[in-house]
Image (cartoon, rainbow, N blue to C red; front, side, top):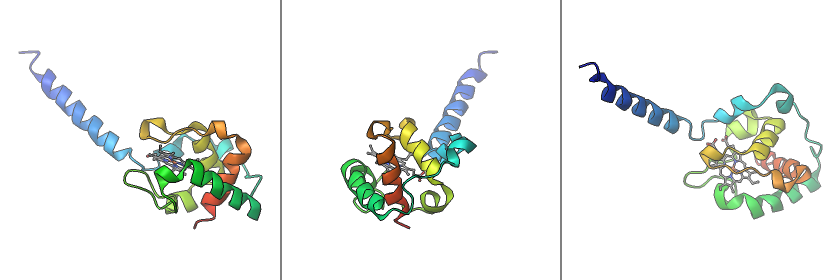
Length: 129
Ligand code: HEC
């Protein structure tokens, strides 16, 4: 009889795990992984109109097929016009996400673009509010 509770225990764990996985979808949990130092990084391209235009091209080349041409999001990919991306997240937070990605949730790393391009695409994203 001692082995009896095991299946129930496993079922309970599975349900919990599914609930956590569902909760983890685009809930901004990645923000909690960003260190204070990364969060406070200043975008060297801030307030440069050229950077927004350059960032837009990068966005259309690399991001639009997931996040939509106008960044409104697609089926399972979040809008980048949300208050989380526009207000809650700093440029430093977005830089951290673009460098590290959030692969378990389907967001690739963009470290291969290089830092200037990453900051430029952030200028574009932040220009959308
Ligand atoms: C393969 C599809 C895909 C591509 C390409 C992609 N993303 Fe994402 N992105 C995602 C997914 C899925 C998420 C949601 C991750 C999560 O749930 O935390 C995400 C999340 C984000 C977020 C955070 C949104 C939020 O609400 O927390 C930002 C900002 C972002 N992406 C920007 C970009 C930029 C900029 C590019 C291009 C350099 C890009 N993404 C390319 C799939 C993609």
